[in-house]
Length: 208
Image (cartoon, rainbow, N blue to C red; front, side, top):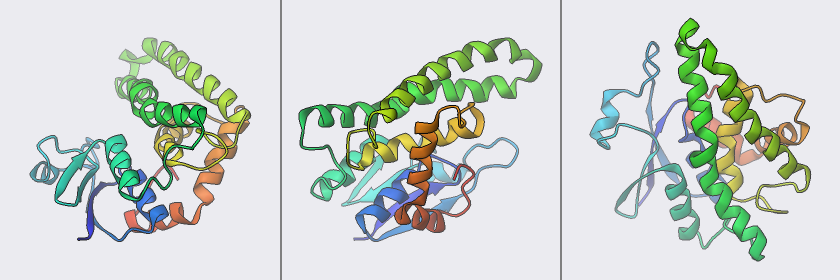
């Protein structure tokens, strides 16, 4: 059975397309476009899942949500290709970053988005939120200054999970060449053939 990915433009679901390309798994993309005014997903996604959010993946008779959980399932399904390294410390880092991407990194990015939309009302809060994000970026810079990938010496699904918050940080969170290790890593991720194939499959993506 072909895997179905319900994919929203400029969203977390781009990472699922990337993983499937890396795995060489056949899949079918069902595309959804954000409302240009509200930037919200269309109501048609609620017919797929009541939350109306992406990604939603249909695989092996299951309908899965949550990017990290989907990645975990697909990696296990592929005999742990791009899964945790064999060494204990690498395995710990893998699991840490698989969850850190959404659990710790995305909240200040979402807060920045909200305060930005508030205009003058949100301006007083922006420096505080930016400092919160800068703490994350500074720490991540030190992490990638000491090794090529987030889990260790090998590319894993943890790198794919970390791509979206770091892409968003470069787009609207102040990530630039002052943090060269993060920029180097992002450029390497974007140069991967599977990443480029996922872009072609998913359509326009603002953060590449």
